[in-house]
Image (cartoon, rainbow, N blue to C red; front, side, top):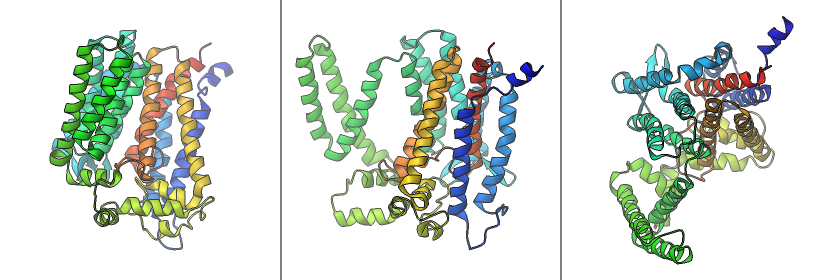
Length: 425
């Protein structure tokens, strides 16, 4: 009887500890970024830190529920979960509430719910189910196309709601597919496309086309055995076409606010005075975020002692720019600590994914790690000015019930799947 009882508590406690550590430290920074005045009522539910505390308490009940469900349920009903999630995204076009320009929320009483956050988990389950049903690597064109369709459907629905940040997350599934046998040339295409885009915007389509021609011709003469003439010509035409297309999209199709963010990031404005003015107006949040982080120094100013944080210099600092609070109040040491915890969590999930005997569990584990990584990478890169400004929360850290619960579901489904391996006799 004791042996049977102990089986129910055999979970990977390292992953659970790292998750709780991020949630707890995240709440402290939300408290610091959102409180006003010298006295603090920790149970002031009109403030973001009070609301987040409620979300965290409800999260514990959600965890118990997720771990109580039989692990086979998630695999068996993954397709149903995916279908329901897609319907919830479609429903936003009729019943959705517009928040900050994105129609991504359902208003339920006094609360709002963002289904795109939960759609990431549903997509990870659907991809894991499809690949595991194949019982092989996705090395045929048919399997690749069908997998891409599963990923593309929610991405398209989300981008139509003007939520670019959430759309980019679906690119993280590339890492999952690569692990499961996606040919390496997809990786080469992806990296080359990113490089071409940056060069086209920075130096112009003509100069980029000339550079692409030199590289492709040079590669052909060095690697004749690997690359045929018609392949070289096709790649060259594709590269030149992509270069001019990117420039056209940037000038004529991209929304002004997104165009401005890229202009600032790549310093595309030739007039230094105009560029600086753009940084002071359009990139105000980013400028203040960078100032807050740099002012923290090595050890930080101390908890709730950050002058730029308490002075509300960074608008909505408790959401996407929460990491700037860490930088100012906890300094380089605190920022490094947060990054290390995230890296440890990612490495732990990947390690557990490789230990899985079920392909479904392994693929899903890689999906979990990939989604968390892309959120972590983009958010911190954005806050520090390393990549363009993209509205995307820091997992377990940023304020918001939908985000916290979505990542809780994402992680604890995997913990439950992994428990089957741990509890085997």
